[in-house]
Image 1 (cartoon, helix red, strand yellow):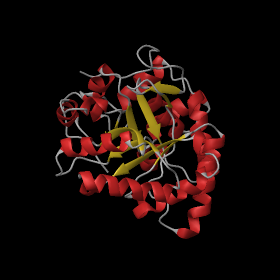
Image 2 (cartoon, rainbow, N blue to C red):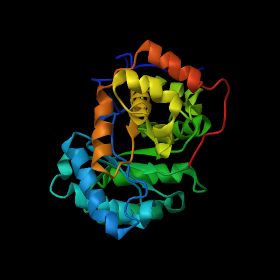
Image 3 (cartoon, helix red, strand yellow):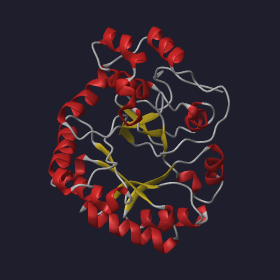
Image 4 (cartoon, rainbow, N blue to C red):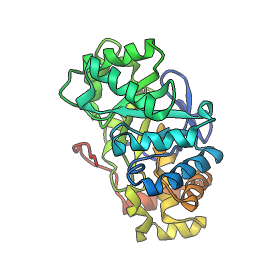
Length: 292
């Protein structure tokens, strides 16, 4: 089963710029990613300033992870959100190697220190690992009870893994699944995206412009020209048009930040969607979950 196309306004969409988590909390459909930030100290100020500009323009969801630059990206985020923590919906991730009861607690404390905050709004298991899921879920629930995190979710889980998760005690408290999703990688549409929508659980799409590859894709040129936009904006607008999807592009230059925000105003037509499907066909069979 493949479902794609523009948001219908049904289900959980509150307006064109938000979607809703299963817990009922509205979150932006456009956030800011931080993968590869914090790796070069010479760029740290520029990276933090880019995130600040994004916040100024309304991109208040920021996604990071303990893995990114070994905490360096979280420190960049801390600089960006200093003095305005309450504006931000903050997402971070724990490595599978730290997903034990004790490991999750320790990793969360480390992330809180790097982020210079007392809470993480959404804490994700970065990908499935060898630690039993029931142990990780118990650790997440303990962090919620302690006020260290507000919600939890997962990343890079395929449909079968999600089904296993929701069968666990408290597994139904999962709020999102962050996956690779863009025009070049549409495999999640076959069963994972419909499964998630059926449960009112948004997917978070990382690399929505395929690490910049789609910004240079000639198959998007004609559509971009019709909208007075760039191919990257069309690729991003397409992701955000999917019902129940949150896009988290990473941008460290002011012009890219502004272009990402402007993509919210692009209204793709049925002709656009048909042309995109011809250029980037939706999946016709199940495939393994793509990751980078």
